[in-house]
Image (cartoon, rainbow, N blue to C red; front, side):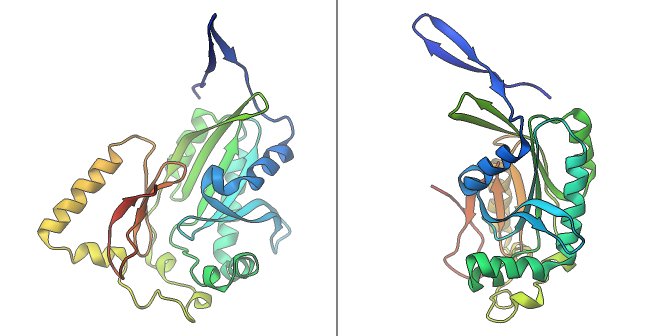
Length: 255
């Protein structure tokens, strides 16, 4: 993939900073886990989570939309990180209650009941990816992001979103799990799909114009359709749903 160069500007000219990747995979994982929310907008849940079949998921988290996130790290080009992550993602979808118990333990009952299974994500982090990785991800009907990193000295970290796919959830994924039903709000509000279908022509035109504007801001803008709203992001959400009433749709700046 293309390289990103970073230069320091001084009075005598410019000098290039040499970008490096960690030689030890664990040190990279530790760096991300300690700063997961600031870097990726993901709340940390567990490190080296052992599944029921004896496998180990590098990092488990919960994103800004309440969706499960699996993170896998590799310091060099390695196609296996994607295949491995997909295996874990399948396991997670088949063991939803295990994940919700973890959320309950770490973040509390409210967050556990609000877990949204409509858009679980796999984030693969590596020193680089190749064109085959990029192509493979685009063929997979999963929410996958490839993020390349570089370290510049001791205090600079660069993240580059190399590729991302966003898949609309099917009925089986948008249906709330039984663990989320008691005390949950999923049955009281209309889904975002229903809200959009019921818009009058004028509001529908405004929505489509806003959506087109947001997607035109860059090739790296991702659109994720959840149960109750649509989120737009790059690496992190930068527009959020309007939450002043049930069943309402809107986007507002996050800052």
